[in-house]
Length: 258
Length: 174
Image (tube, each protein chain N blue to C red):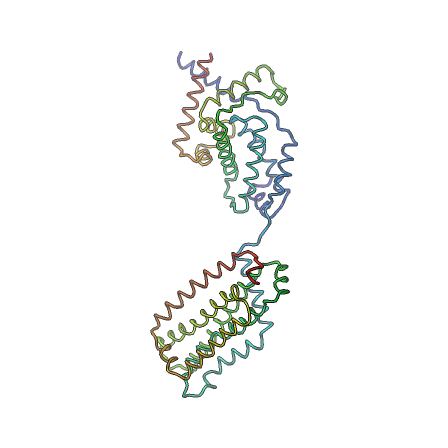
């Protein structure tokens, strides 16, 4: 009897569930919703990584076409360091001091974009100015490291008497000025973008280079432990990555460049 | 009919027709879910609209892994429960006579409509939503757990208790 009652109640519940009628939806309600949602349509954006790759490649092509002769001369200069520099001077120190020269050259170009009309022009770009700065600095830094690596490999070939630890030390030491200039360019291009600031950097580097070549300072610095350079390079890389992230995320702010 | 994943990709690329397709596909279901939870027609309409707006806002970062429907219901569930929390004690038992379908016996339909709405409204919202998702929208227990943000045992318990209460109420009614 109890089972029969339970069944009956279950039937009643399912009957209730099944017979629960709902109002018909007005067709215009759906249309209204669709019209409203049109304002919320996502705007298709390229994935960040793809956009970065594209911009860096574009910047690389631009730099290469604009500075092809200068970069070629720099490359030759690095290749010729061993032969051109007299034997009484430390060729490796000079080789390391020349390593960031592509950055110095392109830094000049990046810093030279400070006129009012340039800022106005930047506002019409499809990509933000920060994204352009980002791509130019990344491409020239990669370019500098590439030139340095090629020249370094060449130097290894013609100096086959050098032991592996010395080579590693030179490789690590040479990266430090490249990374240092990359960070300086990133910082200055956003905060003090004018030719004067880059001239100061350039003169400071020339002074430092002269002191390194003609005083024992260069030798002292060069003889410093490799681990110190590795630590400095890691710190510089962290700072560069942090800066690059900030540069990429920044919105277009005209005032920042005035 | 295109799969949800394809339609969503198209919307993410700015295809308005795909958005229309998705709205037509899910509008009724979402509307009735909210309506059955105890809203008036107008309220259900506004909430459904809000659900779709929230969906559009979240869609650029959404990655379809075959559970879009459950994800949409989760939005509807959260929105509705928030709404009910903010507007406590406003339970809609009025029946919109004009909107009732007329293809079944009118008086019986009216009685059932009021009775069922009343019964569902006497249950706690989590219980009624669990019953609705199970019996009207065909979700499995793990899916309901995901939509309502609960565990599988909790959903099972709510289903059992909800049905027991309904049975009891039907018995008392008899």
